[in-house]
Image 1 (cartoon, rainbow, N blue to C red):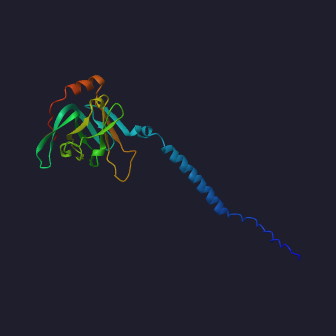
Image 2: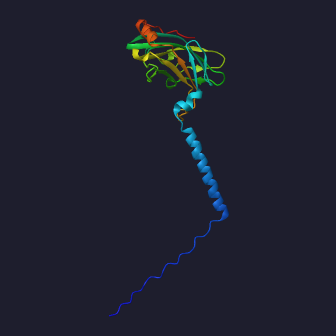
Image 3: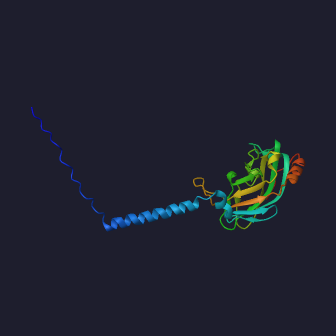
Length: 220
């Protein structure tokens, strides 16, 4: 029996149709735009310290530090082994620490729009690079946390941080302008105030820490 092999017909390749001129032009423009966007994105991907350097205003105790949206000043730095607060019934109560309560007398105001400082807007930066939030042992109503800064006058309240003695040398208070909780704003202005605590000054402050520091009635 003779079998006949039937070969499939060779596929006929057709030349690709040339893209219309406008389509090719559009692709070129899109490519240029994407390349430009990539360069712009790369320019933003700089170190945080470099991005924020021109947004941070520096100062020291007694100086007014203007940070674009607000002004801040630390007038006094003290330390204590115990401070007062208010309990759930509104009565004054004393809280103690095995470390140190660093009490800062802070004033703030704004030039235009009011702003409210939250607990995540005020930090103590120690000389070794650690950060501390204001202590939660003290009722925030006695401190600057939660207060509205208004144009036309200064509001003065303490900020209290509970820190080990080792965190005192080189400590700085950093206040950042509040931002939306849904958006992380790396360009929010901030005030960085050097507390003037050299190794010797920090040791002296800790050694002379008050037995008790009253917060009730502080400020105006």
